[in-house]
Amino acid sequence: FIRIPPSALTAAFAGVDVLFLISYPSHVRDYRVQVQLPAIDAARRAGVSHIFYSSLAFCGAKENDVSSAEVMQAHLATEAYLARLAAADSGFTYTVVREGLYAESTPIYTAFFKPTGGSDGRREKEVEEVLIPHDGEGPGVAWVARDELGEATARLIARYVAAAAGGGPSFPWVNGRVLLTGEKVWSLKETVEALSKVAGRKVKIREVSVEEYVGLPEVKAVFGEDGVKARTWATAWEAIRAGETAVVSGELEEILGRKPRGFEEVLEECWRR
Image (cartoon, rainbow, N blue to C red; front, side):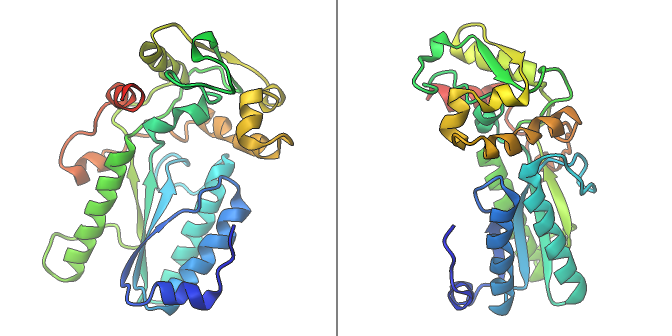
């Protein structure tokens, strides 16, 4: 990552009262922490009074703060840091937005299988098995559309600003978490079956060891030859197996004011456009 001088970060946040901090794009804990916590410190020096933080919907219920997934560890560290800052300074508040797993992100949970696109130089019509360290059975994932997560977050920010100005409904997520998920939990087996419909042929999961997964050409192409990042990513399936992503909260529907789009509908939009 690029190290930005603290003074430059502080200047970037000058004049901002409410900040939406989007998490750094890496699943490795230390990378994210080394970027995100200094950004939070800089925002506070600049006078930011409330931070919305984009976290992830592992851990199960939003009250939980333990996860098996490496991808969740930096989120938990950042959430805890925000909580400590708010506890020490009554003039600073935050809201953690735990975003459900994107329906558009199924490839990273299915060994990069794309129903209408290439994978590691192979034609997708040659792919008959998804090789992952998981048998595909439940518990599963409450997949959610990425654009609806974005809309809900924008609505949350607008609602907070209106409430702070005294001109809108109350905002119950000050110094707390909101959990935004889809309306239904899909096992990974059901997920691949839905992808099969888009692909127009049968594709199934075959469970493999973590070491076999790490050695797959399509996995090395994304995570690198040494296997370090692939092994840490494999902890996501441990978390899914433990039910961490199998919670339906209902908060997304409440915030949007309508039912979220279904998983299969989102897949069709994503892969057939």
